[in-house]
Length: 483
Image 1 (spheres, one colour):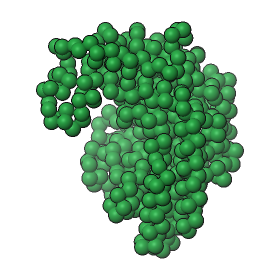
Image 2: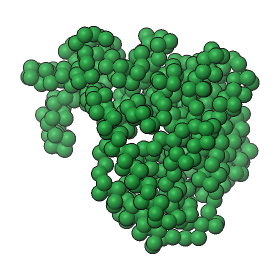
Image 3: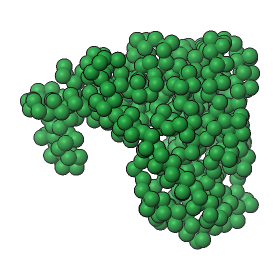
Image 4: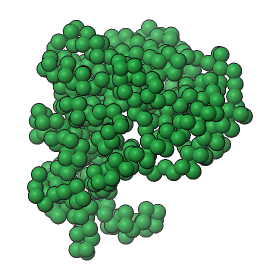
């Protein structure tokens, strides 16, 4: 690293401050010209925001070809996250996941991945034409959540598909479940395969010893991290990390295929500032988060019926580790789906949680939360149990539905298709996505056979109020299937 760079620096922020002092007259884009051309927007966002919503220029570097301040900021990020290279991503972790996949595989190549991946990974397969080899995750049949990848199942997938180019791992899942990443890395590398980590919910792993191992420390080749989730940066700002054996120049070319040429300096400066904050204060930040979540768990589990789970789930295999910052709450014993509790919290108590599914609720806790916020959440959950509790015996138990992959995602997505009423699609091959969002894990993906079991799950999730997305028909009354 250059001698003048240290973790207390923020090169992009410093360059923007120098630009502001220079009092430049803007004859470039954006056309709002520091907000003067759009007073309503300036009044809403504030002059400090619009003063730095600027275009690439020599003093600010260029995200497509960084040679100065952005390059320095990425170098500092790589050091902070124990990586050989780091790239600022302004298209969210979706763009980082897709860059990983597009780097590792091309048309006809195989990639081993769990079926409970985010849709961004399968979208990348639509773009590049690679073929997924799914390791079907184990299920916790009580909680109704997908677990991690068992090492022996990854080994079996490699044995059946020795020509696969890469293995993709969630680190962690949305619920906080971690696979034995170090063992999977060792296994994949022994067979000449890259390891890619979707670390959208694992930014904080790099900054506290009591948390699961991070992808870079486990030896993964690439990791996509959502700085805007637990890292504190602005929404849509993320990073792509690379290990020492990855050709960073090629990765940069891949990124530039899909990433905007008009990188937002609001997003980049937020990455820079947040990296500095984590590098200097990460341990104390996540100490606080861990204490808050542990307190919340204890209080919620005292209410009755609810179950806020933690490391007691660890079994050394499909649950190799657990992210103790995750406040995941099993709601079915209350007689309410997680999405029903989610809706009640928002509509009746003005509490916005991260998401609810048919059996669980996730409340995202970060450095920005306060003890009184936790108290309010706990009190609301207790009142919901008291006022809305129902018989849970007739609730649908969430089970993992193993997909039958008939065609690759790209082939199915671009194939000749027809729209059928959803109730008439059983037995046909889907050519689009169906998912609850969040978390954005497909119930159906292009190329998979539609079954009565899947249709029952979709109807139940809709009835309970899950936000269903993916199909061309926004009302999900019709599905596109291959002809």
